[in-house]
Length: 123
Image (cartoon, rainbow, N blue to C red):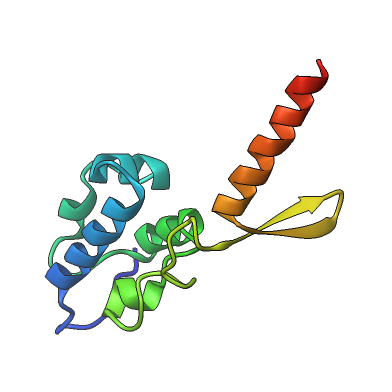
């Protein structure tokens, strides 16, 4: 199994970054491990040498928004996308292969609620 090959690698900082990220998407680190298909030994299994490439691949496959440079080295921002809240980010929907930009999530919820209200009135 390949590991980060650097005698000076700061494993504790990696563990702290991974823990910080897991808290942003899951209730607990154990939930994060389950989501990524990692063993429950988790952070403890990383040891002193750093994560294996297999460990990183599972995280990358499950969390495409995570900036791996940030996770591994601490470079850049945690997320590849802007650090906007979900209510501020743009939402796009593919309707039969035609992408429709519907604005941010708050606007979508309001639009969806209005459409449902109109449908219910018709019944």
